[in-house]
Image 1 (tube, rainbow, N blue to C red):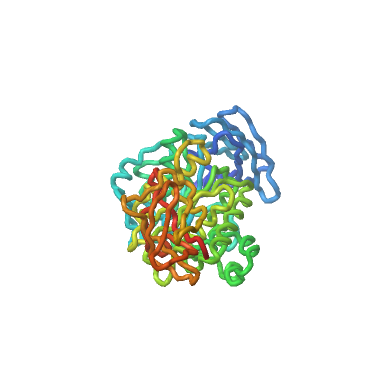
Image 2 (cartoon, one colour; image 1 turned 90 degrees about the vertical axis):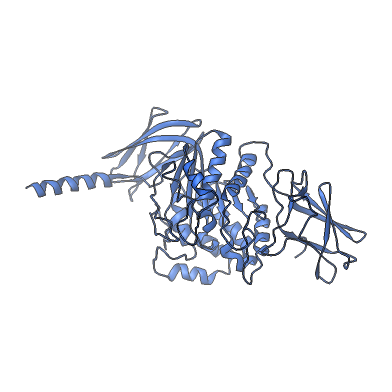
Length: 474
């Protein structure tokens, strides 16, 4: 009798739990985008679900569709909290400690996924990780990690995923930022969130959906690859390969890790990826631009998309400057920004350890573009070139206080004449311009700067932000 009673209780409990269910990204301790209309959604057996919010003292009613799905829109208020949300169907779910603030997604490959602490030979820990972990006491920052999960079909909820490169499987729940919760979280995303929180003094919710060693094709929806053309083999893999959660197959990381988040109201995305496409740089600009537009279409609005340019590294048989060039050209896409890392790379480690500065530079873009702060957010960006008396004059945007980081002459400039052969050049700063010449090039036609994989040049502006590598002529 006792076993029958226990079984009955467990069955009843499981039925109740199955009645109203929320996606994992909606939970206690979460941050909702402030001063906005957000979606609360889920699944239920009941025909009707009620959502009660503490901040408006209101009841919102949602009808379930034939598949048991329901959703409702709720307006949030100014930054702060904590608030409560109660969801009632046949059962009752109460979400506690909900804050209003700024919500961002961090995504990309290994340099975004790289955690603070050492977890493997691939991820060996960031600079000063012991101190950073010990001081990560930020109750106004909330963390959510989507699991690494490759899916053949677009999913409606994230999974805890698989373990890879030593990073534990994801909890897939909102957690308060603390020394206990931060060690294996994305270091770049954390430092971005920390800078925003300290400068804005509002809660920050950061969602990490990243996976090391992944190409942009894996993060691009099927519709995007079809629209681009020329991705027949990738689309065939996506359609025909069996479901394997650990496989980085085209379209499938979008399906498993981004598509489930599409109902989340976000302020924007920060992205660190490109190394996985360095051998196909000629296709990256169109691919990356399409991926951005497809994500925006999926979420239903144009949100800011800020990304990190890949750092100098000893790539074998690949000129990574071509990939950096594609990233630079992607700035033509609306509401984008790029953090340059030409000065903080590591030629022998594709995972540079100064993620603090990477996160800070991403945050500078957001602070300037989205939060109205008067801060420099970009290093010098090549604008135009003119020629006179055997010299080339280069003009730049974001060139206030143009200088070099080491006080020496600008380095890594090359000049080519009509024959297209480049020669090492000397360069001098003239206000917000740089004048370049080479003794054996009488009539310059083109200039390039730091246009190799490994170049770590020295041109910066008054804010100390470095210039991107570039060439004036392809």
